[in-house]
Length: 413
Ligand SMILES: Cc1ncc(COP(=O)(O)O)c(C=O)c1O
Image 1: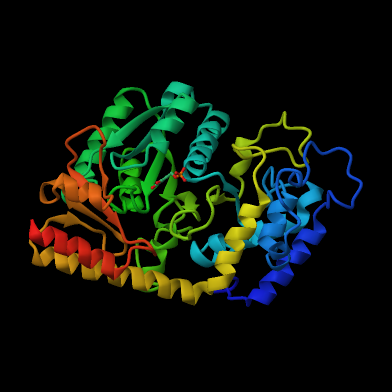
Image 2: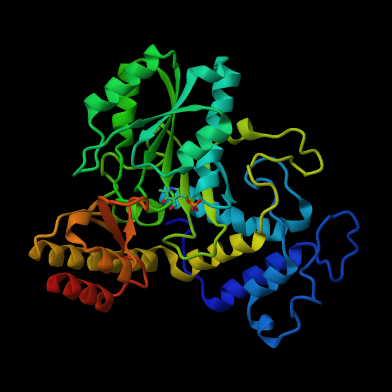
C-alpha cells in the first residue's frame, strides 16, 4: 500500500490541527464574504475542555464547508487545509484499493451512496448527450433487479428510462441469455446508449455482479455504454479478500471498462452519516459541471453543493487509525464470523444466500417465524407483507454471542 498507512493518535491530531489551521478561522480572521460561520456558541456549548483533546470536534465547531470538488480545477481557498485531508482519502481509495493510476481520477465525499450513484448516472447522461448527440429517449439505465433503489430514483430525477435484468432466484446471478434478451429489447425500443450499474454487493443479498458479463453482452450487441460500480456496501469489504493480485475479474480501475465507483464510508467503515464516496476516472466529472455556480471558486461538479468538511476528517481518521493491514484483519474476523454462522445454518438445513466474500446472509423467509424476525430485527426484502427473504448483516456489533442466541432460538422452533 503506497498511501494507506497507520498513524498514531498524536500523529493524526497533529495533521488535523495543521489542516484546520490552514482553513479560515471565523474567530480570528477577518472574512467578510462567506455566508457561513462557526457553530453558534449561544446554542452549542463550545467552551468545554474535552474539545481540546479532540481535533475532530474542534473541526465540527469550526464547520468547514467542502463545497465543490477538490481533485479537479480550483477550490475554495478558505478550506484548503481540510480539503487536503479529503484528497488523501480519495487517493487511498482510488490508488491503493481500486488500482487507479496516480492522479488519473476525480471524486468527492458525497452525502451517501444514493448521491454518488446518481452523480454517476448524471455524468453519463450528459456525456452521451454532449459527445454522442444522444437524445434523452435514446439513453437507458441497465442494472439488476437486486440493485439499490437509488437507480430508479436517479432515473426519475434525470428523466431517464431504466430496465432491470432479472436474476436467478437462488444464485442471485444475472444469466447471459436474460441480459442479452433485455439489451435486444431495449435496442428495439430505440435505445442506443446504455448506462450500466454493476453491483459490488447488493443491499439485500450482498451478491456481486460480474461487470465483464455486462461488457461482453453490450459489446456483442454493438452498443455504446458506460459502466459504474455500486460498491456502496461492498467497497470496504469485497476488495480486501481478493485471492491474489493476479485474480481475474477484479472489480477496480484495472478493468478499463469501469469508469466510476461508489463506496460508502458510513456503512462498513462506521463513519458518520454523510460520507458516501464518489470516484471516477479523470475527464469525466466535468460532465456534471454547473457553470452557473460562479460564486464557488472552481464552480461545482457535485450534486450536493455545501457539504461538511468534518465528515472528510472523520473518514481520514478511520483510514489512518487502521491502516490497510488492520482493516484487512477486521474484515477477516467479520468474514470468519459469517462463515461460522453459515455452518450453523447448514446444520439446521436452513436455506440462505451468501456471497463467500461478503458478510451478508439472506435467509429464505420460510425458515424464519415472523416473531423471531421481529425480535432479532432482521430486515425483510419487502415491508409490504409476505417477505421472501430476511437478511442478517454481520457488522462489527453483531457478535458471536448474538448469533448463538439467534441460532438457539431458531433451533427451538
Ligand atoms: C448497494 C447500495 N447502494 C446504495 C445505497 C444507498 O446508500 P445511502 O443510503 O448512503 O444513500 C445502499 C444503501 O443501503 C446500498 O446498499
